[in-house]
Length: 213
Picture (tube, helix red, strand yellow):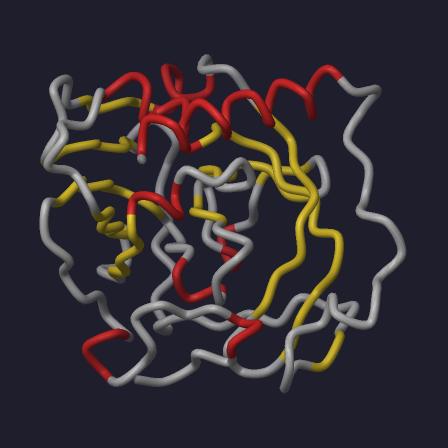
């Protein structure tokens, strides 16, 4: 299943990048805004109250666990990987949504290909430099809009929004996208993250209002 989904995601990325630029979605339909959400044009900041300052010379991203080729990438190496751009909506569990967020960075599938997860890998566990953690099934990480973002609206992701690099998983509530990402672990068994052990939903689908367990 993961292999097929990976191939599908890569094909979708290719179609997007071959297109003439990356454009916003079509005008919102009545079903675009998840239930219980309100639309905002701003971009509120929610975090653990810790905003680590990470010099690019010191930044690394380690990809570990159930993989054949574990990797630790420094900033220069990470920035040299193929870059993608994608437009998606952003849904916060605190009931606000922002349409047409333009993110740039490295597709999760690019990292998946390089580390070659084993057949045992079924879940992904993200850790940030601020100590934050969250967990996502591997199959959902292989969607074509999931990326490690280093750009927002063409500019570097700011520190307040989780820069220099953060995870974006648009189809889930935003707490599943770790800011200040430091490590990505591929796991054979699920492991609850920071908010999940505190009563938040493990599946976090905005359209099903999966806010709390």
